[in-house]
Image (cartoon, rainbow, N blue to C red):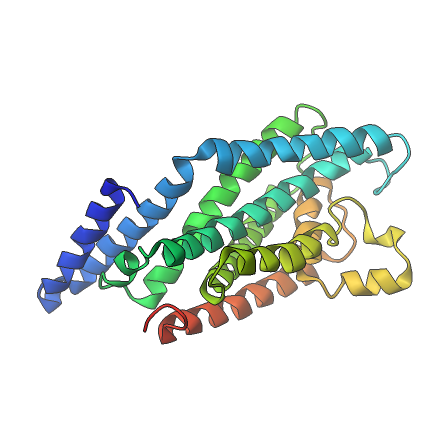
Length: 278
């Protein structure tokens, strides 16, 4: 934590001495300060946190699009390259939302500066909201970057921008919350890496980013429907093409329920101080 972040959080600590009448105003200041710290954290290393994921998305499109563009038609009348763009945008969005909150918490634990976040008079809800919102912001910056660059190669139509925004927001929020849970549970970087490599990465890649589930065998098609990441990407892609593997309202229900469940778990962990206090 640099001196600017330290001073900002130290200011929030002093707010605890304010009269009860000023506590409501001070809680907003504390939340705003923590959110600023988390946004500043990824923005100051934007080459790593933003530019690198954008480059990765472009490379996926160049490789898979070049090989399969003339051989695969996932949706009728849709080029494979165009079909791939929304999936790559959503995949980048999800992975970076998770990485933002999880890496912040594990770094604070290992470096021993988590105390500067826990000392200020912040409620667990404000803590939760600041980490989740900063993850959504990073995810959207990366997602917009991936779409802007890949769109130069294969620009998909946008038939229902509201669906794009809704699923992008819900997906980023859910992965940001999962990142909070992973960061709380993990004590070392290798534990967090296991969470990333054995849960987040497989769930993302097997969610229909590179294919339509209708091309799968019945067993794998049924298995895909048990993956909430599939509904995020399928609903997100519906906003572009007006076509999807399942009804977008069903996807919305599954994603919303998954977000509420993970949020309840994370808030409960924060309220109890699990692996954070004591």
